[in-house]
Image (cartoon, rainbow, N blue to C red; front, side, top):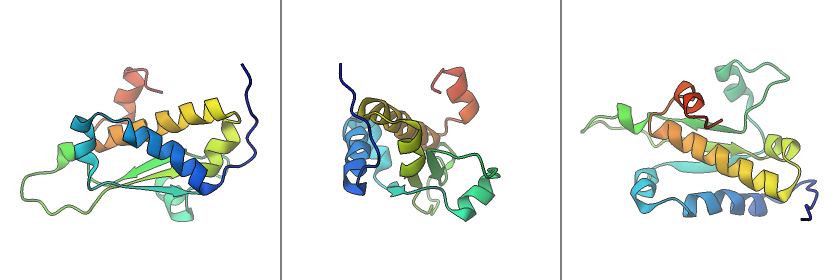
Length: 129
């Protein structure tokens, strides 16, 4: 099996990896994501890093910002949730197309899990890390 080395994908190519994951979701789950905006950013912003308490050497691959559907109540006016996928840390840490594709999938699904109210602790319990 041959692996191609990745230096840096163009944003549309990277966006295609994210879109593949979203398009592969079963309709029963996808309908709950209609109001979720999925963004791609180079890296976490200074404000995001500060809010998460990240040290200079730490990074994240994705971030869910919003109110999980398990905490929403009928009649509530809720701002749309946002999932941001960070391209540079993913490309830096996963240098083959195969490894990058797999980690993008894990990251997107991980952030979607937060939208469904699943915590990082529960994801660890489920061996989803």
